[in-house]
Image (cartoon, rainbow, N blue to C red; front, side, top):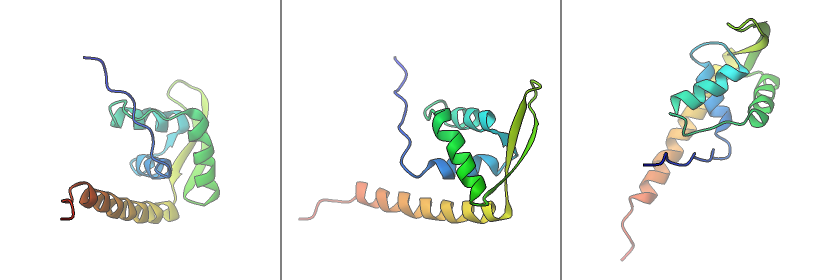
Length: 114
């Protein structure tokens, strides 16, 4: 059986995915990308052209702190971690996402109006 096609990222969810990924440990950009792909069993593919602008945007908002370091392969990379503000934002985003998915679930399981 052929693999299922990739899922398209719903607009506005990349920030949430990045914040959640970085809630476990600091990571450089490529590690964030690989973790999201691994955790979603390759169902979500994040383009580097979308990831890096999002990381910079989150850093500018104060949700991420960043510092330069070296990867396991010895390459220089910027490592990102959640700031205290980022942790609060993650909590707010998770609450909002839960409310949204509950509302969509209600609609999808609703009975037709007689």
